[in-house]
Image 1 (cartoon, rainbow, N blue to C red):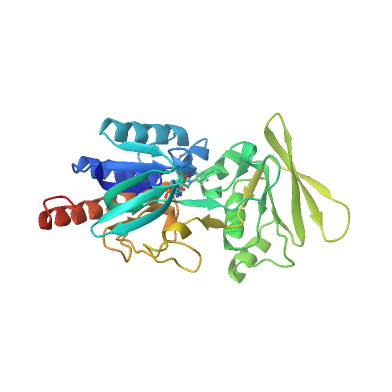
Image 2 (spheres, protein in one colour):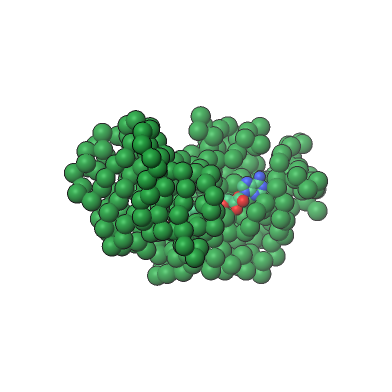
Length: 312
Ligand SMILES: Cc1cc2nc3c(=O)[nH]c(=O)nc-3n(C[C@H](O)[C@H](O)[C@H](O)COP(=O)(O)OP(=O)(O)OC[C@H]3O[C@@H](n4cnc5c(N)ncnc54)[C@H](O)[C@@H]3O)c2cc1C
């Protein structure tokens, strides 16, 4: 079967793109390699999605999934590895050995937060470990938290958390912070922020599946345990877009180089969500991109079909 739209990535951006394309009468295949819902399924509570006071990330993902399934989306739990354009069609090849044919492609591959790589990190995500202070900071009001990292994101997290938490300890492995001076000055002036440079987190401490602290090793001296109920890891985001660079140019950081219109340099190929070059990576911006990319893909398919009614 040739689908009108093939979407790579079943996160909020990809599933929203599917919703919009299906409601425009297009046939859609969504290919997801891990679990439908993407990053948001790691969030126990989402409280910044307009119109919905509170929901879990899984509730959001399940509802969106039902919506697209009810509209007839084809879904594949596969890892898309390569897309080859042949004349007017795109062939999406997966690690599992399938080849899916489509008239257009939406790349919605998201990002991964860079992990510390410590034992228990995955299990404690959502149980004390977070990668999103904007999203999860309120859950730690009045408590002691740590932030790992020393760049802009880490210090923005620390400043945001210091307004609601009892104390914030920033742990940076380099000799100095790398964030902009203005952020560093603001952090220095907050009484409840302390900064430890030349210090590496070497272990996550836990009890009954809940984070209770971190172990930190500085350049000199013995390891030290810092009790905390929250650990915000801000050591960078990692896109995983390289397999598709033949279709869409990448920025030096590895994001798809597309603007607010979600167009790539290849006609028929669009991109949506956290995987594209943008400033704000949130649920609202991901679903917004999904809608924009889907409607652009629908217009593209309509034009191709008008010129080539045989469908190829
Ligand atoms: C713990 C946590 C809490 C958060 N809380 C909030 C919050 O409260 N509010 C908020 O607005 N935002 C929150 N966010 C951010 C929000 O989840 C993201 O901005 C949003 O999920 C981005 O959606 P996306 O579809 O662009 O990417 P993703 O959610 O990253 O989805 C991309 C999907 O593509 C799949 N994929 C990638 N490559 C391939 C491939 N080659 N083949 C097949 N599938 C592939 C991935 O497996 C993934 O499922 C949170 C993020 C985290 C990690």
